[in-house]
Every structure is written in structure tokens, then in C-alpha cells.
Image 1: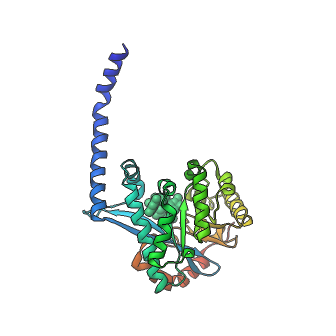
Image 2: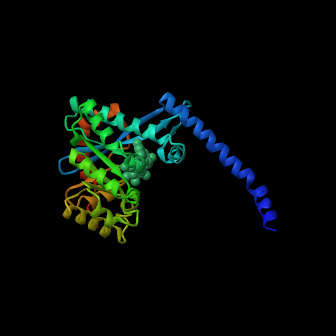
Image 3: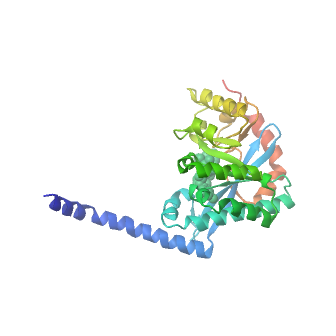
Length: 291
Ligand code: C2E
Ligand code: MG
Ligand code: MG
Ligand code: MG
């Protein structure tokens, strides 16, 4: 009978379910502690411009440094953070810290400081998000022009209020980047509907631009399309000189990836700003023109 079947299923799957629940509970507890004890930190990954040989922006990337020294990436704890609502505190901490840190650079070693912060759709749909951003910028005296927020295409599903919030951010002078472009299904719709200033081409498209096939044509068309719409473009996940070679055939693309720099800590950013020019020159010389 169905009942028997149900009971069989239960006995078959219960241990695994319990195990998953227990481990989720453990992660949740550890995450709660992490919020209380502030075990989070931000790393910053440069996005550079090869025409000016300057760092255009640094993207803030969250890390959870556990007491045993283990460093965890957001991909590995965001699901639990979202399910438990802890995401709100963690996200707000990241936003405030990035703004505070950029303000210190702006007043000190890097007057043209720009920071990009990844925003979850939960943050964006919160009715207080725009005023929260505004008050953080005021509190730390960071000009809105120094801040970019990054969204993925899933924000589109959150509807018209989101677009209204984004428009208010634009009016404040905050830049808006569409992250991971080319991975979703509604890319062209997004370009039309959202008040964007930048598109970040996902690593999955960039990763094959030096291996032949269609992706160099696709990436170069996206760059052309974005530029003709007045949008800035960043190519993500550039790891090899041969990839850079392809990207350098189009002017005005910002480049991000391990080839230029891994994510670095806040104290290293001014060093990268000071010494980056020579480094970028070297990379440019070493990048072979595409075949
Ligand atoms: P993302 O915003 O697309 O960030 C790029 C990810 O690719 C980062 O992973 C970065 O470390 C990695 N990456 C950069 N260059 C390369 C490369 O050349 N090769 C390879 N293999 N990887 C590269 P990370 O830091 O683990 O972050 C993963 C995702 O988590 C981010 O993707 C972003 O969506 C999200 N995230 C990170 N920090 C935050 C945050 O503070 N708030 C929110 N809401 N999301 C965040
Ligand atoms: Mg991002
Ligand atoms: Mg990205
Ligand atoms: Mg990505």
C-alpha cells in the first residue's frame, strides 16, 4: 500500500535526511557564532583598465575565516545563511565594511577609489535598502560615484519594485553592474529593463575565448553590444595571457581575474594601486595577439 511504501521510503531515507539536517544545523550554529564574533572579512579583487594602466574598481568578496583558520567562500555558506535569515546581518556587515574601507582609501592613498559590492536579491527588495545605502555613504563620507553594486539576473524575478529601487540608486550616483552575464536566460531583457552602468561577462564565457570555437565571437559581440548601449564592460575570470590577448583587441574592456590579481586583503590594495602600472604593462607585453 501507499502507506507501506511511505514507511519504506522513510526508513530508507531517514538516516540521510537526518544527517543532512544535523549538518545543516551545525553550519547554522557555526554561522550564528560567526556573526556574533565577527569572523567575516572582505577581500578585494582589482578590475583593471589596460588603456590607462589603472585599477578601475576593486570588487569586495566575502570570506568566513573560521576559528581553526579554515577560510570558507560565500558559495559554501550562502544557502544556509539565506535559509536562516542570517544573510541580512552578514550582507549588511559586508556593505558597511566595503564603504568604510573605500572611504579610507579615498581620503588617503587612492583618491579615485572605487569599490564594487555584491548585493543579494533579499537586500535589494528590502524597503530600507536605498536609505541604508544613502546613510552609509553619508556616515563614512564616501561619494556615491565611488560605489558600484553588483546584481545577478535573478533580481529580475523580483519585479517592478526592484527596478524602481535601482533607478533611485542611479539618481544618487551609484553605479550598477549586472554580474555573471551570459549565464541566465533573460540577458537581453535585462539589458533593456535594468538601469545598468556595467555588464560583467561571466567567467564561463571568457574561459574558452583562447581555445578556438565560437566564444571569442560571442564575447566580442557582447562587448560591442554593451558599448553601443553606453554600458561599461568587465571580463571576469581571466586566467591566461592568451585570453588577455583576445580581450585587448577590443578597446575599453575592464579585466578581472587571477592573471591580473587574486582577491587581496584591504591592506594590500594601496600597494597594488601604487605598483599596478608596471605589472599591467608587463601583462600587456606578455599577452600574445590572437591567432
Ligand atoms: P562573483 O561576484 O561573480 O565573483 C567572482 C568569483 O570568481 C569570486 O569567487 C572570485 O574569487 C572568483 N574569481 C575571480 N577571478 C577568477 C579567476 O580568474 N578564476 C577563477 N577560477 N575564479 C575567479 P568568490 O569570492 O568565491 O565568490 C563567489 C560568489 O559569491 C560571487 O561571485 C558573488 O556572487 C558571491 N559573493 C561574494 N561576496 C559577496 C557578498 O559580500 N555579498 C553577496 N551577496 N554575495 C557575495
Ligand atoms: Mg560579483
Ligand atoms: Mg561576477
Ligand atoms: Mg561570476
